[in-house]
View (cartoon, rainbow, N blue to C red):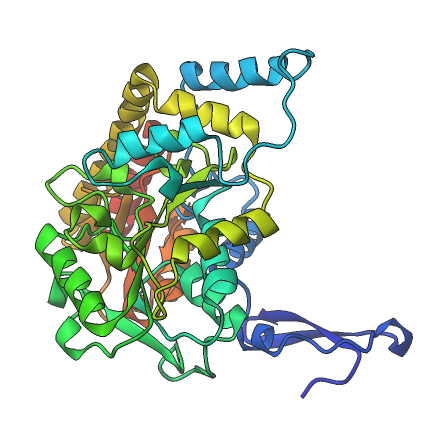
Length: 432
């Protein structure tokens, strides 16, 4: 127990950092007990802290950031021009607009349905435009679904799925030995099972978080695998929260949407984003599809509840960002973005070749911008530290994505080509 009126800032190298506060500064409001269950620091700020420490230690090193999956290539002019035109119009009486529809501009909603869900039965009114996929993950977890539902996640998986569940009170205690939370089902997804969970041994949960192409492994589930997932959800009365943020990177015949699978509209919600295919990581624009056919156990439409949440808690995505989104989905805009996506996939291919030439097993890099590299018998944080210390390259330790990520690091293909080539050379020199 920490002294009353003290502030736990976190831990550094396993040592708790506690700052005592004057008793007069404390309120009578207790802390949310669920926040206390969170592990020290969210993964990506922790990486940022270590990167900052490294920069201070080696101020003249030429750091290459292949860790956090932030895009680096400029947004095509056709898209930024549309946003600029919208901004300038806001300075005129004729062009000014205030609040828009909380669900998003209907023209954009229709364009998303037509571009990404053509012939899949998704209608414009089922598309809810947002300020990004991660925000939608939080709204679904903490507002729509609440704390009284059970959940399953892929292992490894994007850490926000678990952390949002912990914050809302869906998780039990954290077990240091296993690296897992009680009351959360971890579905192991590694090369031994082709990165898809063994559903025959998976416990039934109310909701199933599933990301394809997967972050961090880069694996895109096949049509047959997703059919198994939909059938499993139907048989168990479960709801799938499907993250398709990297769908634009799919190059084979893997589905780009869960709604390509028959019956999925009865059991699934899909989240997606403009961030990784349009470079909108800072612009902030995404969407969530909540089908009319998706019902709660009492028969009430899930879409009606989600619509109420959006109207109560959200004033709609930025009109400037939405103008850019429409330009992205024009014929010329989408073609320009395809070129950028191909550029990142080329980067990932270079990284895969580099690691493979060293005799290391590298997964991903085909249907996603991430490369998932196995270092057998090594701690993923040790590998992260070694690469950072000896090559000045930032990666992400696989352990940060769950216990199934131990022994791996995730390397991002987001970056300028010359930096990717330089990183490949440094890595080859380190592990040759």
